[in-house]
Image (cartoon, rainbow, N blue to C red; front, side, top):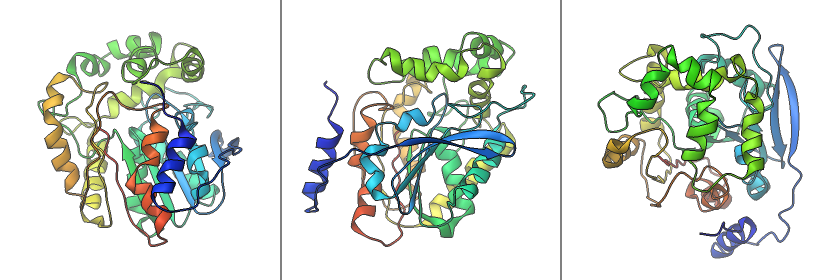
Length: 332
């Protein structure tokens, strides 16, 4: 299937809502840096107005949103950080097995958002671990949040025998010393997991962009291994399990208009999970009233993502009203 034209797709969406259509989608998305707790963090920025914060997951970077930001910058000030140690953000000094945990990413992300003046009428868009961080931020700053959209993320902790359990054949060894070889030496998340979980074949320049932060074997790749070990399976790690449970409980009571976009999981779970979509959807439905946008195929982590974002009720609803509301896309 040919890749959809972003401008055409979004223009059609706007026309269907009887709204003026922007004829020029060109926008300067600028890469900037900020010093955060003594470490340089990078972020993409474009547009003006209320903040729209786009958070990537593992093993990607703000490059994930490169084709999304030009299509939504007219909605507000778009900000897409590179999490610490990822993308163009600086690596942590004295990195080791305890580095780049979820709480450490939160520490740096919180400080960056404060520094950038992200304090009110915020829309958070997160993929994978970026969504966990985004929901956590929203839970701790509920009065500041105008909307949430999340894709392919943890809506609740998982059990090793549950339908949404990560594939034990791959993720099991990652929690042993073998994980250091698989990731720190072989760069498994960039070289294998990322291409396998992408709907299209990644072009050479795309792979180069995702490889660049992890070219040097060893600790430069530590973030991608730590993220894999942070998945709360059977209550471990306990602090991450607690945070994800708190996120789920908050989403269940947060209220607001919500929409769910379901997608069959592929890269993070094995075939047993294919039959568990109803379980995932049931977990997510506790978060409020939803409407479904079913799709087929593998996760749209790259160029198909702009079209889906343009069709997302969570964001299109923000075009129609200034009333704060929450929207959710679940692309598991």
